[in-house]
Amino acid sequence: MPKTLANYFDELRQTRIWRSVFRSGSGTSTLHRSLAIQQNVFLHLFSTKVRKRMMSFSATWYLGTLTFGTFLILVLTGVLLMLYYHPSVPQAYADTKDLQFVVSSGMFLRNLHRWSAHAMVFLVFAHMFKVFYRGAYRPPREFNWVIGVVLLLITLLLSYTGYLLPWDQLAFWAITVGSNIALAVPLLGQKIHFLLLGGNAVNANALLRFYVLHCVTLPLAAVVLIAVHFWRIRKDGGLYVHQSEPARAKAAADSATAQVEIPKPEAK
Amino acid sequence: MDEKHNQTESQDLSRRTFFAKLGIGSLSIAAAGTAAFSYQYLSPNVLYEPSPVINAGKPESYPLDSVTQDVNSGIYIIHSQEGFFALQAVCTHLGCMTTWKQELGIIACPCHGSKFYVHSEDHHKPGDKIEGPAPKPLPWNKMWINDDGDLMVDRSTEIPAMQFVRV
Picture (cartoon, one colour):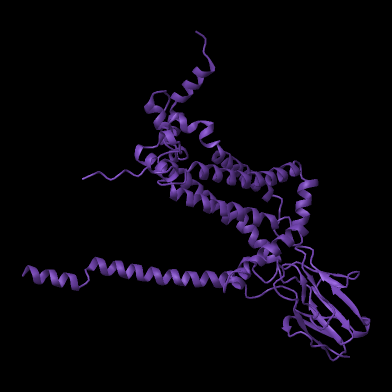
């Protein structure tokens, strides 16, 4: 019998080098498959086993995964854009224009970054609406909902800080207006405004601070919280599918939405 | 004997509790110090921002009944019948730059549509809001004439309305 590609791949998976990287080795038994998930630093955040219903399109519309996908595109394109962008007042705008008209594929990367950012904000909201209207935020998943809300804020802050970086008129005035909203905070407004901009007006310090927030601080916070968010899915009993819920949680969820029949008092 | 032993244990700190409290105490002090340090580090002590004091030139260059906007410094120099005064051009709503609408005789903000008076009448002063979301009138800035006879404006100092500089 001639060897197929699958045979070669199987042989590769038996080699010593492959086994040193992926300890679970080849095999299609339940144990092998479980180990493949459990022993991978990235995949071990997820359950080793999930119900088929949880993976169906109707359960989640894959909105969380799609959001994560846009985040990965943003990290990749963002790192590439950083190679040509200087966060300084004389250069920032010129670099943006260079990215568009001089750098090879710069226009493509910049537009991909921009549209992915818009898509991510849209998908985060869609994901949250889906979770909300399906009631998937209810116990035992309430803490993961809170992490999700923080991730929403980080997404919006990433959008806001990225808005300033092109350093054009739109950026300048949008950040002027946005940072002035911080002035409305009682007592601390002036201080928050000053710390955020690193001064009294949108200037060189503000550009640098927004750059650091946009490229380092906020993405790091997002990565950490995304990891916790994914891990909590497993810890909270997997993706929410009503039919898969334990009887107790199901009853609690039903009583929250449907009218509860009050039993008549028994006659003595 | 047993009872006495229990009593001393509940009154005295055990070695473990003592060190735990000492640890938490020192960590709290360190955390407070870190917070203060971070706040100070994040507040710049020297700012390379433009000076708030502006030399607006000779008063003669502003004709009577004229409104002149200095876009770079964000102020209006107004020469009215009562005298000279300076209005801040930054909208009190969310900080956009307003513009002088000569054909309408008012100041208007392009961002959210606030409008302001420039002339004074019985019921309003220059800088007062006509309409829009602005919560406050446009502030009056301190204005004076220096030794060279130039009009000076301090953008960081607000003064009560209706204080004119007469030349």
